[in-house]
Structure formats: C-alpha cells, structure tokens
Amino acid sequence: MNNLKLIGPFKQLIPMTGLPIKGALTDEQLVILEDTGIVIDGEHIKHIGKFHDLKQQFKDIQIQELQGDHTCLPGFVDAHTHICFGGTRANDYAMRNAGKSYLEIAKAGGGIWDTVVQTRKASKAELVKGTIKRANRHLKNGVTTLEVKSGYGLSVDEELKMLYAIKEADEAIPSDLIPTCLAAHMLPKDYEGSAESYLEEISTKLFPLLKEENLANRIDAFIEESAFSASQIKPYFEKAQKMGFDITVHADQFSTSGSKVAVDFEAISADHLEASAVKEIELLAKSDVIATALPGASLGLGCAFTPARRLLDAGGTLAIASDHNPGSAPMGDLLTQAAILGAFEKLSNAEVIAGITYRAAAALNLTDRGTLEAGQLADFNLFHTGNYQEILYNQGNLKPCVVFKRGVKIFDKHH
Ligand code: NIG
Ligand code: FE
Image 1 (spheres, rainbow, N blue to C red):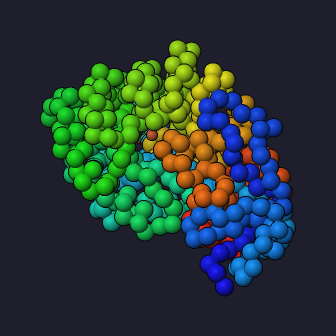
Image 2 (spheres, rainbow, N blue to C red):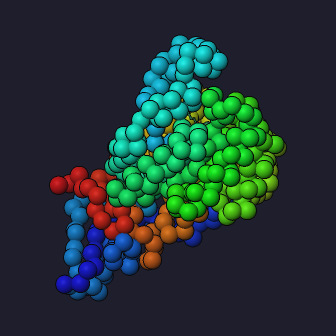
C-alpha cells in the first residue's frame, strides 16, 4: 500500500483555475468538472480526474468512496480577521442598536480601547485558547486559512503577547493562521506622546523583533479620523517596506484617504472601502492592490456594503473576508457574509467564490491554495449537493459536510 488517498466521486468539482485575478467574472467562465476524484499525496493534490479512471490508474490506493451527490470547492481563505482578543463588546452592540453614537459608546467605556483593556488583562494562554476556539469554528465552516491581526495590545510587549499567542494557536491547530501586526490600530489612550512618536517607537522596537522571532510578515494600519492620518502612517509604512514587510491597510471605512496610501505603497490589499467613491474606485481598479470587502463589518455596524460591483466593473479585484472581531463584526461566518454581499451587490457565483478562494489567497500573497489542481495544497470542502449554485443560494446555511486541510480529513458529517 502506498501513501496515496483517493476521494470521490464528486458530482461537481469547481477548481477555480484559469480565471483572471482582476475584473468581473461570469458563471460561464467557471470550469465545472463532473464525476471527479482527487488523489492526495501527503499535504498536496497529486491528481484530479474522473473518479473511475483514477481508481483504475492508481492501484493499491486508499479509497474513500462517497455516497450521494457532492460538490467540491477549494478550502476557503479568510484574509482579514481579529480573532485574538479578550472580553466581549455585546454592550457596544446593544448601545449602537439603541441609537447611541460612536462618541457616546466610547465615553461609556466601549470601542476598540475596551477590547485593548480586556486583551491586556488576558494571559497569553487565555488568548491562545480563545483564538483556537474561534479558528476551529471557522474551520468547521470550511475556512482552512485564516489571517489574524494583533492590534489589541498597542504597546511593544502587549503586541508581542498577542503575536506569540497567534503563533502558538497556529501550531496547535490544523488550519493555517497568517499573522499581521496591527499595532497601528489606534493611538493607545495611555501613551504619553504623539501619534508620530508612538509609531516611531513601534517601528524601531517592535519591527525588528517581528523579523527575528518570525512573528509576522505583514504590517497593517487603520487610516481613519479616529485612528491615524495618511501623513502619520507614511513614514511608518516606509520603514516597514524597507524592512521587507508586506503592507495592508484598513482603508476608507468611514472617510477616504486610506485607499490612496494603499495604492501609493503598492500595498497587497486595501480592506473595508465602504466609503470609497468614484475616485477611490478608479484608483484601486487601476492598481494591483486587492480590494477586500468586509460584509461582516457592514452587518455588525448596520452600514453600507463595500461597492464591490463597481470595483469589479472598473477592472479591480475583490476578496471577501469576515473581519471577525468583538466590536464591528462579531458574527464571524465568512460563507454567510459572502453570500449576503453577493445578493446586495449583485455578484456572480464566480465572483463570490473567487473572493473567498484564489483572490483571497492572493491578498495574503499565497499561491499554493485557493485553486484545486495538481501541486496545490489539499485544502478542500465538500457540500452535500450536486449543484454548486445551491451553496450561495442557501446563504451560508448549507455548511460543508467534509473538510480536508493539508490532505487530512478534519471531519466528516457522514460518520
Ligand atoms: O476592522 N476598523 C477598525 N478595526 C476593526 C474593528 C475593531 C474593533 O472594533 O474592535 C475593523 O472593523
Ligand atoms: Fe479589521
């Protein structure tokens, strides 16, 4: 017996191959393979082909033969989350829905700073536990790769605590956690000094440690009136870029100026963009910056969605992520949110699925996942349906019945 495994047959397998990284997509462009199987060799896909041919071709292979109709999609990639945190912000949510303003909520002790206080109180072990719990729930929903930001520590030591916790969580679970340093989330209320000196301190003291300890390869900043201005962030990003970090930006959430910084720095992604208008859409669409829509934040705050349709029609590229965080996006259900964004923004199945597979992988600079073909990681989800359209049609209520991560079956609802 060799180490190979064959799984199938799948009524439909959507490999998401041969599609452009930028621009609108129609469902007619999707490759749909029928009666297919996947041969897995260790962590990778060795072969995709007709199940019955593969059965003949590969003798001595471990076979999992499925009963009933199944559709296979690449494992989902959630390219923007804040799932490492302490406490809850249920009270913020209740106050906001009772009509209280951002300022009133902040005055009552809510907002990002509340989570900073609660995250600082938590031990690293508690943060690891919470991160694992949330990441495992995402994995059950088919998210096999998950970006996780720091940004609730807001001092060199507390940001380090978060990033070590994210690293420990990653090592303990099957899914891949991609860490990002968001020390520029807001100016910490207890910092005695200017925004400029805070950012200077983070870049001189924390950035080298991120490299030495291999804690993060990505630097993010929240460019917003309540956080940092474009001119405050420029020297910070210049330093990060010189040191070889990838740049990503919380841009145009409530006011516009972040997207221009993202384009100027050739950031890998610009995320949020709910406030982006014609000028910003044009700028982003002309660039290679990946626009990442965060419908979970729109649903959490009761705000407009990112203009995803206009971004794609202008020739831009679109990833969709959950933004799962205790404040603005408490739901944390990528498939549900992506399906809802599709209904409101009139996105094709192909555009939505691309946004949570290969285009999301590109937003994390990953090329080894997000599509299904020989050589790619064996990360994939099976759904109990013979028609892929059922998946988004069910608006997140049709969950995967089987999830494979790096060639390992994580669970199987049939057993
Ligand atoms: O992506 N926009 C800023 N940061 C987060 C919210 C974090 C929080 O409220 O705790 C976001 O929505
Ligand atoms: Fe965010």
